[in-house]
Image (cartoon, rainbow, N blue to C red):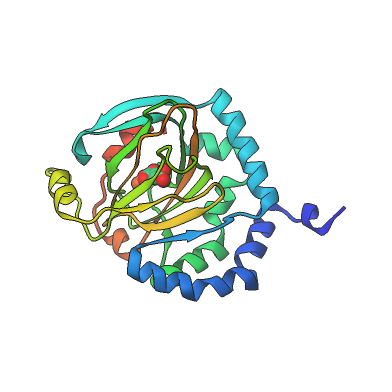
Length: 250
Ligand SMILES: O=C(O)CCC(=O)C(=O)O
Ligand SMILES: [Fe+2]
């Protein structure tokens, strides 16, 4: 038996995120994150674990996913059109995704990159979720997240030019009563990114207005979103309107 297969998922993740190769990337990522409120972590998971998680997700999308086609009032009635998996389904059906969320070495690296403590969110249904866009026009409309940070692992990306782009506007403020999207979209520079399959990105999600652009026919995009908070988040009142609409069974 190879060393790799004899290690548990937790141990493999620890080894990966604590490896010299991963740690060496951190200073440059931290610099970039300070600048952009966004950084990409290429080949986020070790290949064997990525492959395992992909297979688990494929099974879960076959059997446990729910189609969502809604407008979210608190983000200015922007659309969500995709299928998704909630946290409890991922907990029961994936040996990898829950372990990624909890991995102490990952939290340490994320904290170094963010320049502050990055912690698991205190609201269990929001810990990790997955969404798959697979119908023409499927879109994850403009919004902010409830907590400060998200790591979005793009399990499967779209070809360039077929939609599925991440666009964001940093340094924006979410007023749930009056989100003023038109104001931000009309007056601010929109930054566009296209994270490749297997890449994860860390974003400052409470102050970045962000969305995923509508996909073209015949393409598919699958992601897993891990949510993290700051120490400051723990002291403020956080509501979860969007989560409650998108994951009503969680
Ligand atoms: O799919 C993405 O890249 C973004 C997902 C997202 O913003 C979210 O789930 O809150
Ligand atoms: Fe988001």
